[in-house]
Length: 341
Image 1 (tube, rainbow, N blue to C red):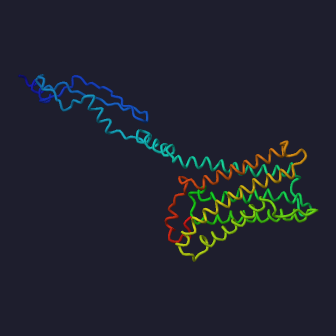
Image 2 (cartoon, rainbow, N blue to C red):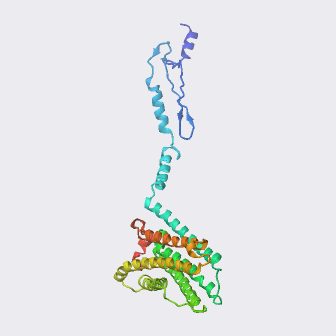
Image 3 (cartoon, rainbow, N blue to C red):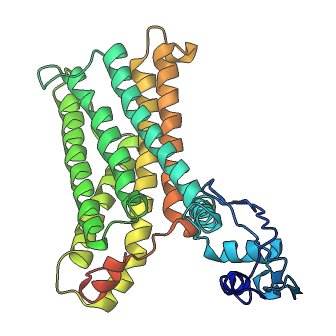
């Protein structure tokens, strides 16, 4: 062998790795964010030595498509909009769709009650404005009387009913706040009721000739409901707002307070229906009430609204599934809470 040949052989490494073919196979993995990831599979077919003999294939460098896919999946970071996020959104939507049916029913009926009460007030104002000359002072007893049905409807029916429902209509409000609101609405109703009573007595006494007072069943039941209302207010204030009363007395007072509150409200509704009927019979004379003129039809519609409003209030106030549940603020202040309403 020549010297040049020895030098040429020395330039070649003893074991030369020749890559005869390199295959790259893209495996596209579609992620939830819309990106594609390409992975390559590289296979070393053979290893040759300096003499050209093929060595055994190296299996450690071979990866199948399934293995590459597994590695790529492990390296992927799942974004918030993938399956986990979808499940989270579904759970949030499920909470809304699975809301307590009793609470849904209460909200629908509560809104219906408010619409009924407001419509009732508007129709009473329309009735006395279009068919009985509107409102007036003591110089005109007939017009002064018109304050009576208006203020009784606003105070002794609408506000009275809402004061009963305040605990259930505002169920996420603190108990102490609800007590003060309950008492405040009652006070507003009481003030309007007193004014309404004054106007009706003035309209009777100042009329020429004077009209007798307190002879009708409407006046008897109406005054009785006002007296019950006043006693309820005083008893409730002493028992549940004024400090100093023992807890067992409050517990004993609660059923009576609830019962007579509802009883007085129902009595007020009955008195209002009798009062508007009495007014229609006495005042709608040309054409007479018996011919069912527009004033008579409107009076009947108002009476129906009185009954519907009263029925809704009583139902919402007595249905056990609509009972207000304590909130954390109530629990934290339980020891200092002055009532058990």
